[in-house]
Length: 161
Image (cartoon, rainbow, N blue to C red; front, side, top):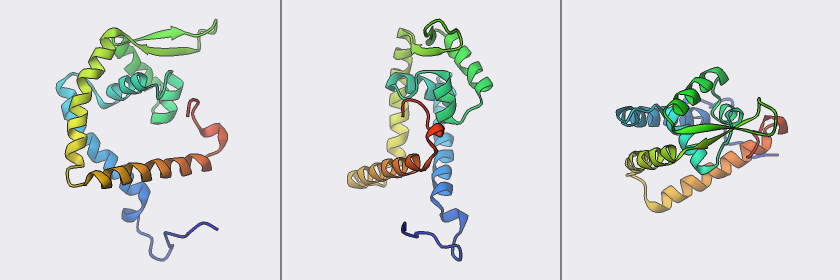
């Protein structure tokens, strides 16, 4: 039987890992969005470019699934990035519905110019942490994600994970 770190009698939402992670995510958006906007990008646009650069997700379906983003809204964002010459759609096989996304040279250059801005804000967010604490924090987040992923039904895990 798994350890019981939470108890029904003492549970408070503000102390749950889900709430705290979501709150940290929201606060990071508050920090990152103004910086990205100054350079003409939204956070979602940055995520798509960085995920393509790092091979995290290579097609709209995987991006939608991992980001939990509406496919129609994501299509509009991809269209915007394609119109700006930052990515291109690559048709797979003969099935027109299957599309991969690929950064253009301009897209690679753009994401490389945005990363220092994001790195600066991440370092500010972690300024009160020691190097050992950051490494432990990352290790624990990876462990948590691995545990959560193993509890999700097989059909619910995005391809490529």
